[in-house]
Length: 335
Image (cartoon, rainbow, N blue to C red):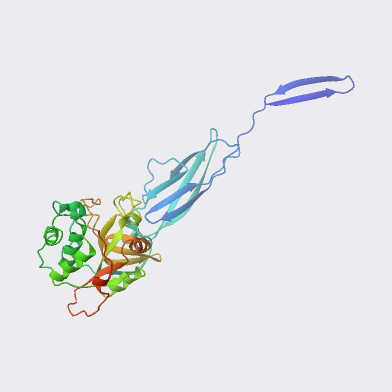
């Protein structure tokens, strides 16, 4: 509505009146950004309404390559469908205010949904190594009897022995009975003699950087690491195989794990881990989350520097003459 002022100068008379003229509604300017984030596509509305009216966003596509059900928001994440090759996808954003609407369509190139993407590692694997064996050798400490909550040490020691010898029939309770049968955390100084007792070739190394573990893996060995799990990143998505899948609320969360491989993905190193603290937590396919879990190299570097800056190397080569450092001359740590 506008007000009209009329001056009749000669007569000195002023008339005031109103004229109901509705402001013409402008059409919203529509735009959006998109990005591929490992196993998802993120759509972000960048639209603008010249009249500053609130906008309603609706995303749509005629393709079945991404799930676009029940979406109506300014930013949305959608899981990628499984693809064995790159494919084009047209996505349309329609925005509307109370009286008008506008839309835009953009073509997105969806990547192949590789195994690395599905488990949350990233886009491109450039290097990898796994020293797995073709028989079962993982133990979940949850199933290790009276002292299960502190049996990560006996459990990793048992796993390491089983890795070297398929016919080994020992269980973590046997290890607990041999060292500290009254309970309590095991120390690195308990693991080494238990390995020796079972004729397992092993040696201890310093960890100036976590890359030393990678070097040992490249030689076909596995490595027992003693660390503070507080410094390991917690998982971002339940279906990913990356990062810690349980909560550690305080520091000094000493723990033993086994590094048995690695992948270099998008320039970052992830270590393939057997974590005994599985406690029956599973993925949608029923597999234990403690099996083949991937922890970030930088997290392991920090947590070992803080807790125990050494590692115990396990070799299947009985004639391995590598000496490492003298375990009797270092400070040992519990887990």
